[in-house]
Image 1 (cartoon, chains in turn blue, yellow):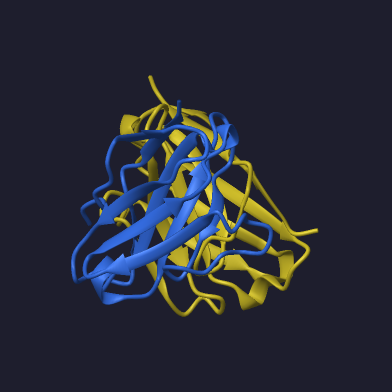
Image 2: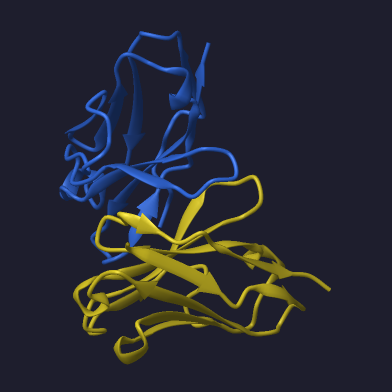
Length: 110
Length: 115
């Protein structure tokens, strides 16, 4: 049950777009559509931003989008805003009927 | 309003036990998978366990298998996590989350394992 691989940090300026990658294997990310992305502000509860690779829950800004290619999923945030500064985690269902999270990515808005 | 409220955390010595509860309201509990996820201080999210809507499918992270037991009581609208043989490395905030995708989370309950 190895954690999915995410970059430790990414940064961007307001208005720009950034992409966070999430790399797994064919036994998790590559094998299923059940990839989710969560946003967590310091001291707060994680919030679901993307589910099933690219679906957005109601109330989540359309500036957030998800995609997948092979064993790597990606979260893209367009029109970066100061409030987007947070930690982001990907998660996937696995072939062992478990779940696995990525190590998390700290997004800094410059 | 959909709500998940965890309780049962606290300070326990290594080798001890705790039972966490997650009381839910505002939705049909029996229709949803439920998960436990933990977060050690300053660290990332780690999946702990999940249980299918009818309790027929359960699984655990390797790090807790054999020590933790997940269960649910539909009549009480409550999810549980029985934690035995606790270790220092189990120290974390424990969250319950709803559904296959974890669309709603509780506020968390803190477990500290220390002598």
